[in-house]
Image (cartoon, rainbow, N blue to C red; front, side, top):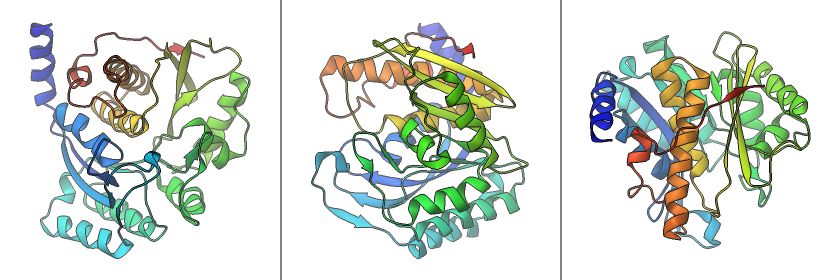
Length: 303
């Protein structure tokens, strides 16, 4: 394992990747940037993080303190980074939880500025809206912004099943055919000359065994399914980590299926160690080697 880790580390050191990540931040635990930044750094990427909110903890606890930032505050930070001449070296913009609909225009300002400086850069939109156990938990206007403004600029989108159904109007709860139809509809909403790559971060259909959970990647007319054992754990922030890892591996290798396998394997290892520790928060630091060399590697199948 030590030799494998050293070899992978040497390979990753050759990847000088810079990612601008615009998401929420929590001081306690892991969610938003507090879930996405460290795995990217552990893999060797430079992350320029801009926080859309700063909360004491994630909202799953039911009580938190902190502030939601304004679009103007976020835009000022973007322009400050631009003033350093750094945007030409930015490989990707990653956006997640916005906190306020006004932040949306600042995110698109970042995407426009980065693409002007580096036309090869891509935009990964994690369309955070809600989930089945909570319903919609973002402020009014954010869901419409994602559908009408963010997705049309996105090269990669990483919804969960609830968000995919909200954005496309397609019920994905039964057959794989319906899931693929929803993914294709979402791709049709994305940047016409972009990758149009979709990662469905959580999926259960009538063919999913009860003791497993699925993920799906779609790009270029192909679909890949990754199935991993279900773990006895319920934590916040896993989706943010998956989106960040998928973006990293898609950028590095240029393959959606390889990115799906790498991200899915790493997050399974992360959640397995979290479950073993009985932790309410993701064991991000304790399980950090899973990001570089997952203990168990899963293989995706074409569907």
